[in-house]
Length: 140
Image 1 (cartoon, one colour):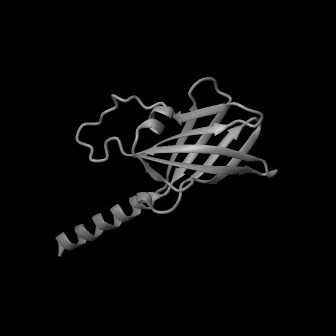
Image 2 (cartoon, rainbow, N blue to C red):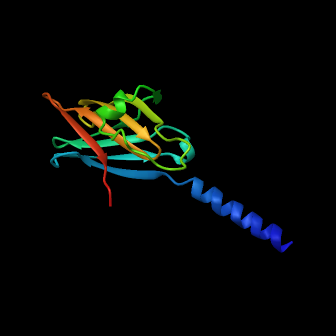
Image 3 (cartoon, one colour):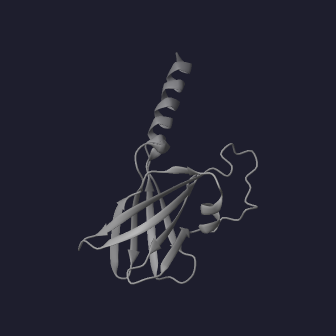
């Protein structure tokens, strides 16, 4: 009986933890003219929510449909090191690429590409008026 209660308790804790949304903070590769957050739903259920602060405006929206990036070109475009390795990880070099259009409160649009590798997100957004800003996760 005691074993059954412990198993039930452990199951409840694991279920509660899988319901947590992970939030990542992204900063520009160079300079500090922008910032972004990515709210990833638990266990790859649902769509990630993106928020980008750029040029005094805050743009929000959902990540676009993710598709597997197989050539490696997008990974290089987003700044991944080709020598990047994680021993014993089954999803090594599995990159998911997508595009989205985010919207500010005043209706302004911001086109962004995004790349996901495990729980690591990177964004490349076209600045209004020209240029591009690259954002990646803040490392502590």
